[in-house]
Length: 430
Image 1 (cartoon, rainbow, N blue to C red):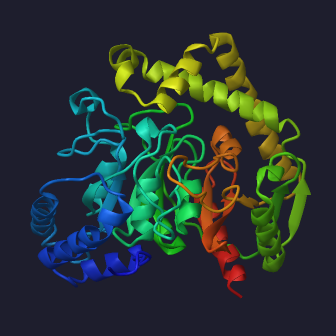
Image 2: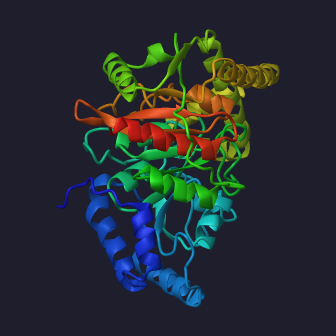
């Protein structure tokens, strides 16, 4: 079997396909071969009978539709994985569950429509934890099959890491893009809350959920973000180096010692100005409010389905829904109000200390051994609570498994985040 880690550059593949190298049918053959050789081991994709024939038909239709377009759409022919809580026309949505697919149907997601308009082909559905909660799917980490790829978007992260596709969509409620990207050694981008449409997505917690993406490198993330995000406006490369913020205290203490040491060494090696700020003195309260919102909204989303199919839900998901049913609405509203205060605090701290980006570990450590857990989302959770854009970049290894550096920007500064991330990456490689 070929090596499992063979990431594909989105930018290079898109450019080659626009130039006609290879043609549609040969390209589909290559994509199918990559998936067919690797996925029986990694198990990143939901099985799909007839995948090759469907992709071939879609590729030929795309070629006919764009035959008179000299330049070609930006993602012409690129095969994309779609997390299986996002509806795709022609493919059933299972959401990692045993519920009848017919009860989970719905119109195609807005993000998928944008990908199709940009010329992308849908390679298939990628494995998700059940309803994007905690019960893991069968996907394995391509770096070490005995370790989790993370969750709940682990299928998407693993599909990109193993080179089956150069781009995949996931969703993040707490840490389900940033963490699996870090575990699998790829780039994960979670935009500002609401910048990629969430219609056609089976919600986990609607006021927290964000559609995000996985690519093998930062250039690919910038290309995909321009297609997917509302009102994307490229910014010039910043003239000055960014000032990085480090939130000291209980939040950072949640990182494992080895990962914390690697993070500190990496940060010191960048040679960039750093401001240490006690940004979350009430960290435990922040997490409590976050889970109050998450569990309350999860229970609301699943009220009808859970009443009909509770016996079909996996224990982890059922337990989370039942906890949400016990949340008092007054506590939920108080948690929403507390979030507004937290958002203002982070914005004020960044302004007062001249911070361009918060720079933090992407996960508490490398991917844990075993497939029974998807790992801890705590390093991403506060930023998701605030709805801020974040990206993780691969920054070395611990015990032979990837680590990631998470960069977080102010709300709606997604374009600037990706531009500054390129500067940080350049410094890391000097």
